[in-house]
Length: 151
Image (cartoon, rainbow, N blue to C red; front, side, top):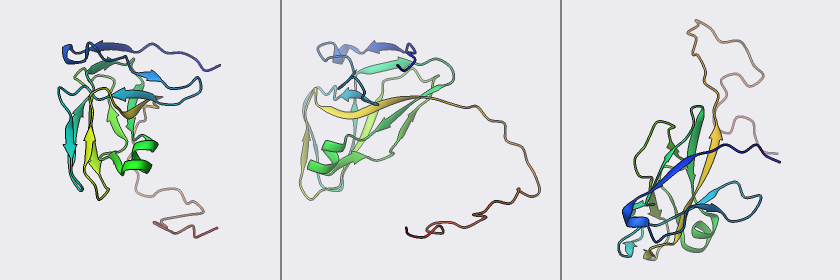
């Protein structure tokens, strides 16, 4: 069983009637987030819109929230997240909002209460950057995009 960590959640007044974010299944990695819209929002092909979720979080130090696309929206409608994954820092206390973009050729209507993204809570390692004149060698070296070839 996975260790459980508590994350505090606050509902905004415009989301009182919406369900709390939740895992869709016992082993799901992401918590579904809902659109807390006053009315439906149209996203035309190539457009992006900021969609409120109606919640704010307080995560413990050492954690972050990652906002990720929903595969069904991507496959069936070409809807994804513009800055994927979006990052929610542990010290952010404002409403979580999601930048949806329409990569399809058809207009998409986002409905109130629709599942629009998933939130993955992730433990972080805090690092100390150390300035050096040279980096130690590796097998890959400075090889960039496509350097490792096809398998």
